[in-house]
Image (tube, each protein chain N blue to C red):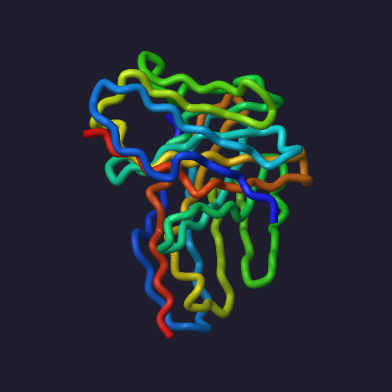
Length: 115
Length: 113
């Protein structure tokens, strides 16, 4: 089965450090999403891309977060500098098709702990 | 303001019962998408369905069915003949064409044997 691969699965870092999370979307999928899940805020959409172009990243704190797709096989989410409140599970998902021909697949998530 | 309300925080049913999870949304946008996701105890997220605002046709997929009614701004999800494996948190979400996304707080479904 095709899958979305996220790395790392777990990350513990100290406040102030840079964190980079990576996502390998399913080959051929043209839409990529980044989500964050915390107990306090629930699920939030941080950013999404279509054909590698950012469509929206209004859900992302711009001062410290950045999301990019350097190529069709890699999406990155970077936090610099990290803060304890960034501790969360970060999910990536990729999707294909438009109209009725669609589907989204999630990665297993990156559990980030900032101490 | 944009909002998604899943009024049922927790639902508990016995296996083989039918169960409906409610989702009511608010948006000023005329073009939007509605989603349902499942998050089992293992923590992964599973996409279930996407429906665009111009398509009010109900959908059935196996034991799952969705009822989209624009008149009441609702997108309810029904599981027929529930099974223990359906136990999970279910999220309803709204994504507008302008890119604004809102999730509901989720409904925790427990199906007992």
